[in-house]
Amino acid sequence: MSSRSVNRIAFGCFQFIIAVCFFTVLTSARAGESKPVAVTLSDAYDFGEVFEGPDAIHEYIIKNTGDANLEIKNVKAG
Image (cartoon, rainbow, N blue to C red):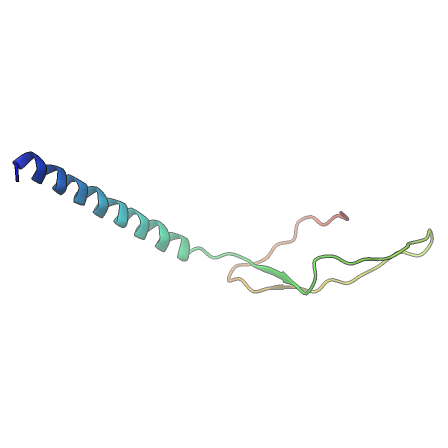
């Protein structure tokens, strides 16, 4: 095997090791991030036919199953 082939193989191995190290660092950084996770039993509710007059109200229960504070900053009807 020529020294040029050995150098190519060594360089290929070096690139592979660098890629694996980069992926490992990136993955562990993401694993350490705290995130809120909002969970509801249902994300939609059908009010049926709504007439003018009293407010149509439905209560949603939202649970944060994440490991960071959940902030609900804006709610609107779809």
